Structure formats: C-alpha cells, structure tokens
Length: 156
Image (tube, rainbow, N blue to C red; front, top):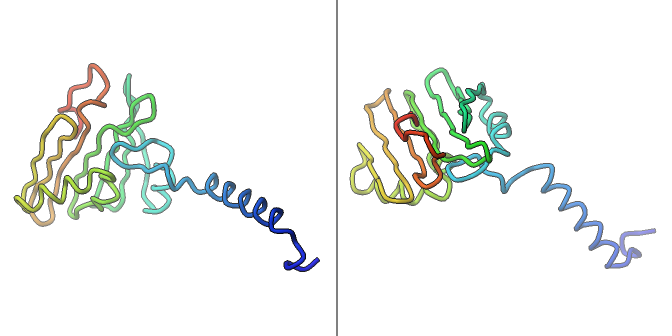
C-alpha cells in the first residue's frame, strides 16, 4: 500500500499517536525554572553536562548543579515538586532566561534600572543579583511559594 492509498483518518490518528509519544518522551513543558517543576531537572543536567547532587531538607530538596568548575546553580524544590527558589554563584552569569523562565522579563526590567546590581522585591518575586567580573552571586524566589517555616535567607 502506497502512502497515497492510506486513508486520511488513519494517517491523522497515526500522526497524533506519534506526537503524543514524542511529547511524553521529551518533557518540553516541564521546565526546570523558577516557578516550574521537578520533572526536567535531570534533563537540564544532561543538557548542561553538569554534575547533579541533592540535599534533602524536611519540606524541600536542593538540587545543586555544578555546570562548570566556576558556576553552581541551586534549585529549591518543595515536597510537592515546585521550584520556589534558585540561586547561583560563579565566575560567569547563568542563562537567566532559562533559569528564571516566566520571570525573565522582570529581570530585564530591573537590569535596565541598574545593570550592575539588581534588586527587585514585590509580593510575587524577590530577585537579587550582583558581583564583579569573575565573582557573581544571586538568588530569586517566589515568596508565596516558599514552604511554611523556611526562612528566605536560607535560599543562597
């Protein structure tokens, strides 16, 4: 049977099944970013070729990615699987668009006001980033999603 002989309905069903399988195999909607979820942290680790370690606390887990000898990113994940905070330290800056996800535009707005040292704080987001060339440090967290009993100062 040639491709031309296959009924359109059969081809549409096969294509739909293929696309569903592809989406399950590659979780493109599960972002390891601030406000995202745990599902893609291991995929992110493979993408960066980073070393991934964890540190479990009572109500959250810290996923620590050593992307290079000089850049470490920590992702703070609640027991329900939500990334409520991220922090970074290194000689280079992280990919903020990837790290902050939907909050990247907040970063860009704050950067326009002061590109050397960023500080943004409101009810939905706290973002701090600064340093000097070769020594950058920062953090971002979602105050409303920080688990009860966790001091925001522990996100570092």
